Length: 337
Image 1: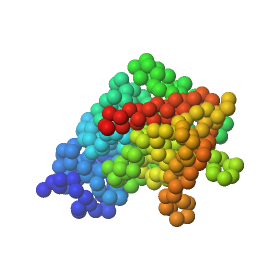
Image 2 (image 1 turned 90 degrees about the vertical axis):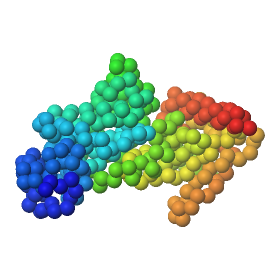
Image 3 (image 1 turned 180 degrees about the horizontal axis):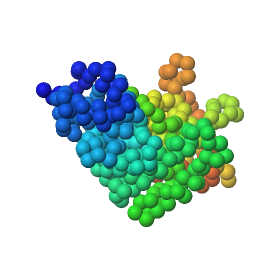
Image 4 (image 1 turned 180 degrees about the vertical axis):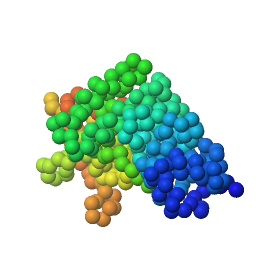
């Protein structure tokens, strides 16, 4: 009697054979009645059977065989990408197997991922083809950024990544800040194999997904003239700051947050890339900071909280976006009163 795809009864010799010849191993299980010849059952078997070789799973899913193609289509339906940022969705999908090195196989896998991501997030791009091309581009960036054999001077720069993706969205450019954030997150954290957890990692990352704005800023420490670089995320009624860009599958290292208040304002501080957060009525700015040692959140107060953007243009965008969402917050509260 064929199994329903569960891992019970899988013998060590199957795992060894699957590692060397995944197609042959699956066909043998089907012919011996140990596994039903059904794409949904085979995909479930590949996803949930422990200790299967990750590279062999990737090779099987990306094989050009028509049955393997149906298994791949079924396999991706196990993943929900609703509300996840693009590179986080890609990290989640690639958490369950190792991506093959052959270009044609990568293309098959990225194509099916793109279709599922676009179906779950139809407002992100003009078509699923955009998601496919961007997925391929992100994989190339990930390889370039984290390959120790590529010298630092030869690695892809942010400007090169943006230039490579011009006109990607049906001959339209994707937002520059969208591509910059992807570049920063990929170069800061490699897409690596993680134990498959399905939606378990969604909960933490969704707090920072699809923000109004995010990126690196330098934050001035209170009482001393020193600067610490943090990843800032503007979302809902908070300006979060983290030790590094939050990515799916990894712990989000939150350092603190600055609540948006109706009397808070952002304004340039001089002619450079520095700007300040201050209260219009002269009261103190609240900074809810997580203590390094105790991990307890404590309130720190600032007359002015200084931040430095990578450029004057980026500073102007931060000031504009923060003030716009404070005004939106005021408007929402007035409507609710």
